[in-house]
Image (tube, rainbow, N blue to C red; front, side, top):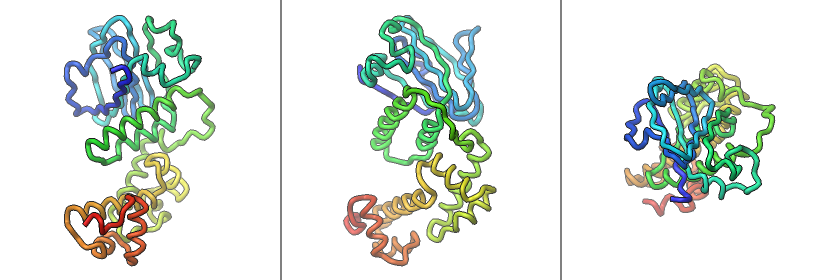
Amino acid sequence: MENFISLNQITPNSLLLPQEKIFEKNWIHIILCVQDKVIYKFGPVYARELLPNKAFIIYDPDKDLPFELDMEDDSLLYVLKMSLNTLHKMFAPESDHAPIFNPENANRKFYEEREISTDIIAILHQLREVKLTDNALRLYYQAKSIEILSLFFSKNKTDLETCPFLNNEHIVRKIKNAKTLLIQNYANPDTLPFIAKQVGLNDFQLKLGFKEIYGNTPYQFLLDYKLELARQMLINKKLQVNEVADKIGYTNVSHFITAFKRKYGMTPKKIT
């Protein structure tokens, strides 16, 4: 268990087991609040409010910390859990990015609240959107755990280009609406300026915000979506390659085959 790192999503509908409602002693917990505030209640007296785009680090070497969790309807949390030894192995011993790296503090309680950087917020939005099989999803979460930790404990630098989109839920909804429009007309998509106008953004805002939230340009996101849809059609519906190409909007079958092979490393024919 020494090198164990877990990353879990918690929503208001999550059914937490009793052992999941405890911050275990000798384990580091990093709580990342994505949207809407949450309140952690530690017993009848003490409570801690965590606001959106804030993170809370908890480490207690002496005792377990049972808690109750109050969440708003749209609240969303991600919780990273690892041993102190695991964290130390991932970073240089001389690291001074947080007091928790100091070996002298291993036997001391550590509580710290931080801002979540825009880079990490983008990763958390990606976690919300990804659709993979269970085994692939576990691997994806492990990779993202390490990516989040590397950014979370990197030396702070002044963020002169903080993306306003990710800090404005109203604009995030507009970008999500743009994604919906792209998917609805995936075979014959509208132009980006037209979609941007439909959702109330300009072309630049849409491109920048889309990249921040989904990690890709709108058209690359759409291409990935179409190719995954094509793969599912080939597997489940047993359609011919030319039929699938036509359904997802390719007029040239060879172009479809080239794009498919570039993404999946094999031709569509090998799946049928």
